[in-house]
Length: 253
Image 1: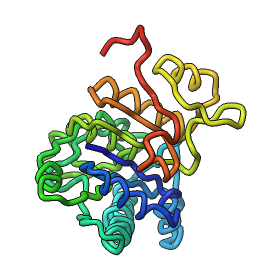
Image 2 (image 1 turned 45 degrees about the horizontal axis):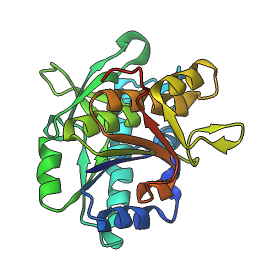
Image 3 (image 1 turned 30 degrees about the horizontal axis):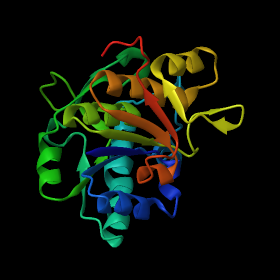
């Protein structure tokens, strides 16, 4: 069972659909979680809205959330589904809000608005789709835990993919980026343990999106996911590609 998170920029790679098809052909059940922050920002500007960020996270007002839903669960999700079906993949688009797939809590409503953290996944719907031979393609939105009116939250795609991988008991989580792996001194690091990954963040080698990926990696490994890799598109089907992260000998599961 493989969960693949595809960042927005990696979605433009012409080999993406073929890499997903190759992973499916290997006999793996595959589930895709996608991002798309650049497309969200572009659409906001077309509507006369200015994207705002704090600490690398998108500040999401109630009005912004509607744009996030339109772009992620609408345009991007259906575009990817269409590409995958054209490549012979039995793809089905799903929002993280559907069937309460993702539930989260608003992390800082005063400063960040409708941004969620502490994500938990109910993988029942995804398990049904996988059992039927489908490849679910999931947008990273969540239902607010405890909400009576179904209020939505914008959540980080790497965090959502990690939560889903834990809920599914996935063997492999691949966080696909627009770089070939975790890079230091211009070279891809082939493998890391959690202590070394944390040190890269502390030293400022891994920042922004890469730091977020390493933090999501730690959550997945501690939740029982067997393997986590950060890689380019080729890493979707090539298990030797990218950077593999594992527990350090002193880490406790």
